[in-house]
Length: 202
Image 1 (tube, rainbow, N blue to C red):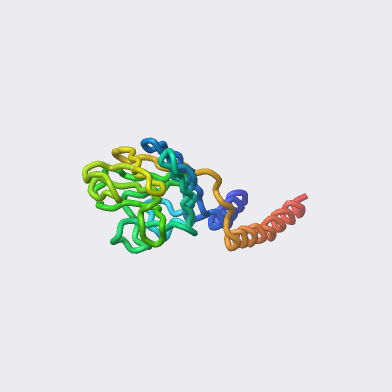
Image 2: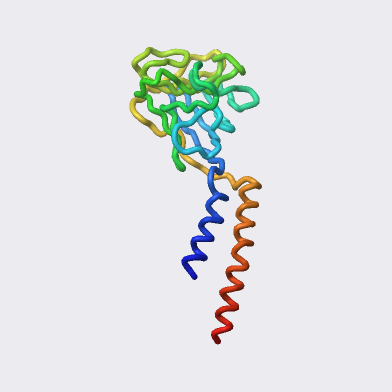
């Protein structure tokens, strides 16, 4: 009976906690500048597409000038050829980290940039070996940062690198909470029958 109750609890609770939004914290020194802030996804694990990134708040600075990139004043571009729902094999998520393969050869990049929808005055970009974002030389993966019309700041990287780490996991959406509540209510009759059976034996 205990095993049945445990299985029922697992089945009821599992849907409530799948695909909860995850917020990842970003913090890099890039040349004489930096990028810091957060990127929020829909909880997808594995390669990410543009559609999986729900929010961002990234403060970029070149050491003298800074700019805060948010969805209201910037856009996210993953290559120029990938549709919003096609994952980038270089840009991957786990439950605790966002990673980018700076030695990848998929010929793509991930760039958060202002002005929106197109432009590269203020930006932070992750690029692989074969496709520079807005500057740099093919054959060198790096993070590019630029604020206003200041100089581009570069951080050369190679291989798969963690670019952000999970902060606070967002609470499940209302629909997930409804599933959780329904599951717990479904346990009521099982517990009542167990109690009645136990009382009948006494």
